[in-house]
Image (tube, rainbow, N blue to C red; front, side, top):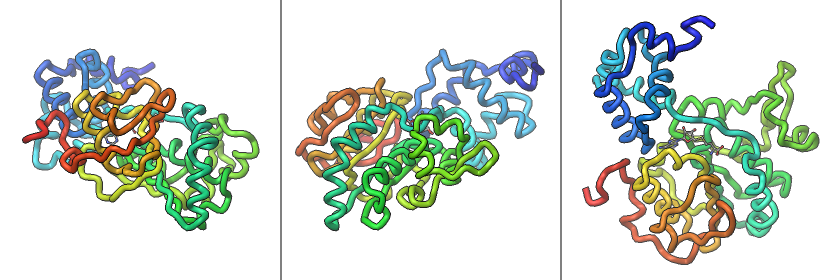
Length: 306
Ligand SMILES: C[S@@+](CC[C@H](N)C(=O)[O-])C[C@H]1O[C@@H](n2cnc3c(N)ncnc32)[C@H](O)[C@@H]1O
């Protein structure tokens, strides 16, 4: 393998290593912008992921790269830097038991309500390249093939514009469709003949993709019947996680609404009055109102009273 193909090695051999001060400055910037905590053990990972960004600007030191990020022209590069450091791992029907719960318990009454003229809203928060919200759309369509004729929408958001672009393209390697039955594959995908398959229009029409940083203002009003926010907050500090759970409760005002989180995540004690554990990583909204001030955006690490 060439040095260029192994960025971490190449960085070291060229003497391009993150100094303590540069690592501290980058991890503070990442935390401020995203809520993501960069533990000291992540230093080599950060260095290797950002090495490509340095090269793309023809820079020869992390010092110069940090100066670019902090400069007046650094806004574009700050977004690219965040895109480079976020973990976007996802897959179709990830944690299948949650989709089973959705299909068997959660959706039937909600779909009946929608068929009687009601509205149904689902939010996939931190949707990465789209496998999660499309899996939600397919689950809806399997239960109600004419779902697009009713007031049913899935909002799918992520901080990273690059993953949102891929999600909107709705084009996936055919081998990644393995979790689906042959019938479901046929119903929801169109093979493009080059080892890829495209999501069919029906599912696309149910999903709206938007770039959204969960730490920022949410430019929509609730109410979400179902929120999926899985494997996102696990990278955040505790305070940011706590605020987020409570903010979710603020956009899920209907008792009985559902919140699904990642299997290695847990709701903080502060959010417990608003959600009761159903099973595993699925929660049910209680009837407790969220005080208005607890629904406001708060930057990572910022004092709530600031
Ligand atoms: C590991 S993926 C999870 C994808 C999907 N939810 C799943 O479980 O398969 C985490 C996603 O969270 C996004 N993310 C990280 N910090 C975020 C923030 N502050 N606001 C919105 N999205 C964020 C990342 O860009 C990434 O795409």
